[in-house]
Length: 247
Image (tube, rainbow, N blue to C red; front, side, top):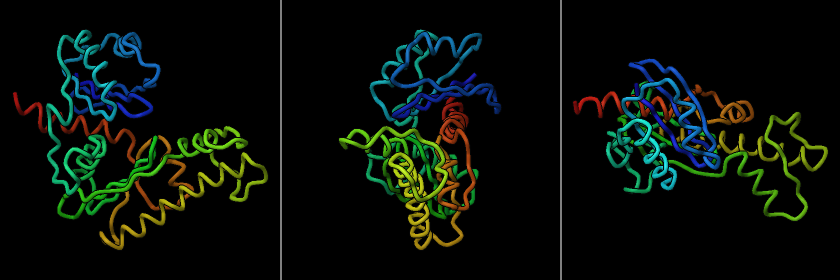
């Protein structure tokens, strides 16, 4: 069994794969992580290999230590022990491995050219050319980060929980903030996607992923296909194509 782990800025997402089938998906909050929580999630599962994709080096070290104890085998770290086989125009050493893994999986299973919108802690755009080259992308604050920033950086604006706004014109402070962030981010994504298509071609496909992609899809009205667990599926593909072949 393969344990695929995606360590993000907010959550640790994981999946257990047996051959081509995902047996289990689960999440652990990054700030609340413990070896005991991981052990509980993996109870009665015999993990033979682990592959980690991470953008949080401190958590990578902690999980690597805990996984060695739990499985008696060191995990493979993407970017260190295995390199994503995708040509990239990005400056070396600066591209998050999760974005590269997403692009790798999408370039295998979806029509190119392709635009990936990942709506999580941050909202990222990743663009893959028709000849399967990672061209680059954009990064801006995610929905929850934007809401939190308004609360923390102002004296009077209140905390607002993320949800779908009832209307575009807010009738009080909280509904105005919610509408501004959700409709604003949706409009921003739509405008950026349209500008990118002028470069990559009007028939470029758009693929959406991330915990808040449903809100982006609804409030941007972008025509996109959603792919849940994109990074975890990409880790699994990378394991099959690059690690298992080593014997």
